[in-house]
Image (cartoon, rainbow, N blue to C red; front, side):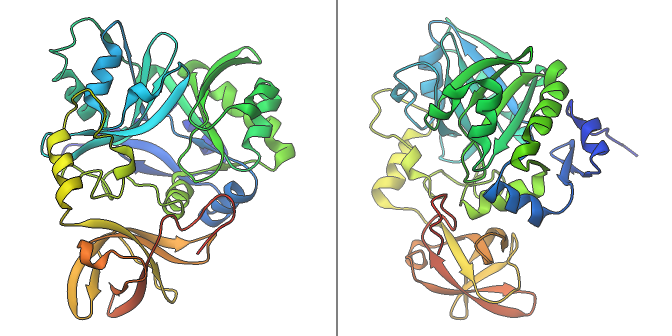
Length: 372
């Protein structure tokens, strides 16, 4: 019998002390919740929550060819990051159009930082290493094992981080990057997140991750901060209609099929992996399309449940849950384009019942309070 030991982040002991329920996530022993997913979801929507996402991967690419290499690897246009300390969302795409992973790319003053999904670190590292041939004058380093990552998310996130790092933090635009020293802890951070709320993702050495976590939790008490687990992170990202790799994206699904065509820049001058197939999809359409569904009643749609148009199965749910803040069941599903128009009436097979569901526009939740 083969057994494997789950990896743990530098904050594992802190999670246990807080009474977190720990689960296996992509080979990591991670907190899924502390008090309740509902409570943690709502504190992020209304106040501020702190997540441990140190299981994520980080690659540093530097040297004269670094920018050209990153531009070749991803579907978005990294040269739109005209100034350092800026970031964008993008994907690694296979020549056949399938998605290797989705990621955030930071252009820093002296290098490029790529933040990838925990489940794909090894695969992504192998992928980018197979495409270095045209770009000899650059160096790459996988710094995942040395890097802790915390996500501070919610309406009070900027005020709290400003208390710690300086008032200038409040003026950072979305998808920008900064650095600071807080109580002797060197940190860097992007105004990014995976919840649909304002917030920051903070990079810190593993050696100082526990110190930073404790500092934020302590200083955050005046903002009613709470520790939040991966359960709330998932319900928050679904309300915000943000894709999850392995659900809305995988090696058989392109960014365009996943509804992320806005992040594919076919007009960039430089060639990039997957361009030919993505160009074909944009020109001639796709066979499947990711849509947002608002379901009726209380039964919850889950991944793999079939979606019907009349009595014909036309697709499947890729993610589903209760919309905790919006107040009704929600789902992502893949259906043919003929059934993807806003307002289309479909049903989802939940146990023995076909539950009515309607195609709605993205996202289910917007930070300005606009929900539908």
